[in-house]
Image (cartoon, rainbow, N blue to C red; front, side, top):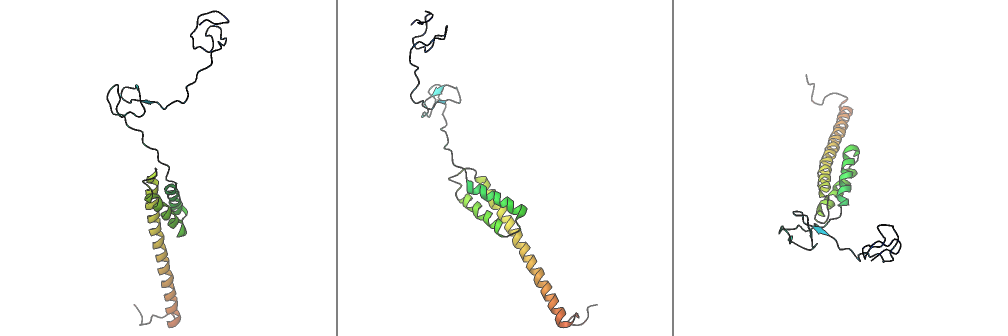
Length: 165
């Protein structure tokens, strides 16, 4: 084909003339729906996306792994567990982290990022044990002080069985 503007010979499928830039009147052809392309990791040649073995070099082509959604409950449990370590002055915060992390661990097959759920579960358990020990020690101190004050009130500050020298 020849350009109508400058008369130079051009490709039959050219949309514009490469010499003068004038439009040739040929409609631009676009591929309908591009199929996804796959390439062999060994030889780099294009292969059928559904192929299991490269037809060029014979190397097995790994199928793309299915992307799993993010384990948001596991991540939330991890974050709440970290908050409970830093500012967990109540027993409820590590308990919420434990519940969220446990649900995240139970659902780890369906989601990615399961490590956060496991870490949150461990942190929550350690934090809960710490706070249970703190509450027990506080209770022992309160009861000890209560009984000490009670014996002082009953016996007038004297030991009940004589002196201890």
